[in-house]
Length: 161
Image (cartoon, rainbow, N blue to C red; front, side, top):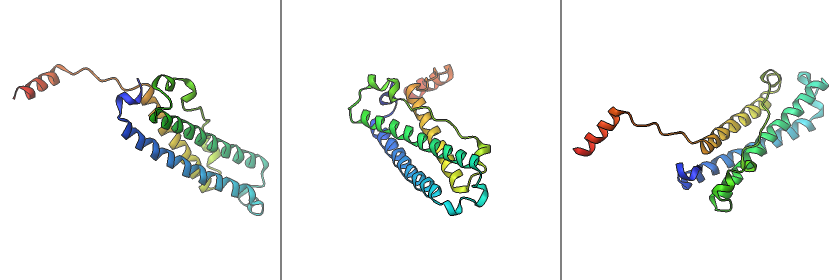
């Protein structure tokens, strides 16, 4: 079952568009921040940035943030294609349209980074988790619980009066 069954496409479209804008803005912020940080050699020595292992860890986190955001954007673009009818429901079940795996960040490692880097890391992880939950609800929609006997009686009474 696909989202078309559980949500109308208009609501889904607004949700996808909002997430897409959020992901694109975050990707631009991340690119600007990490590019600026790598280019700022004079300030690299402050705060332990002269440690080569820390610089490598920082570069790896930059790649993790970028990877997370690119997976999110790719998933959202496939959702947009589905909305426009470019991809049908059967095709959307294909693994290639699923949210790609993105490695998480070690909290201990991130704690040593500047506040702006931690904010981008946390925001990208939060957005990834939200999109993953959305995908999970699409792929595995919640099962409607059977009505209890008391609820069935209440419904019969409400229709009788």
